[in-house]
Amino acid sequence: MVVIDATTLMLLIDPTAKPPLDLATNKPVERCKDRIEFLLTTLSEAGTQVLVPTPVLSEILIRAGNAKNQYLNEITSSEKDREGNS
Image (cartoon, rainbow, N blue to C red; front, side, top):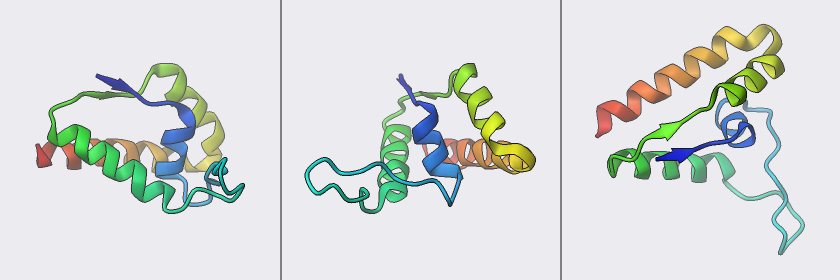
C-alpha cells in the first residue's frame, strides 16, 4: 500500500502546478507529471493499492476552487483507468 500526499496529487491533476526544484540543479524537476504517472501505473500493475487520505483530498478540493468537480472527475477516472490496466 502506498499513500500519496497533496503535492503529488496536485502535480497529477493541475496542469499549472509547479514541480519541485531538483536539489542537484536548482531547476524544476523534468517531466514530473510523467514520472508520477509512471509510478502509479507501475504500482497498479504490481497490484499495489494507492490511497488518497481524506485530509489530502480535502486540501486538493480547497485549492481547486471552481475546478473541484473537474478535479474529482480526474481523480476518479484515473483510478478507474489504472484498475482496468491491472
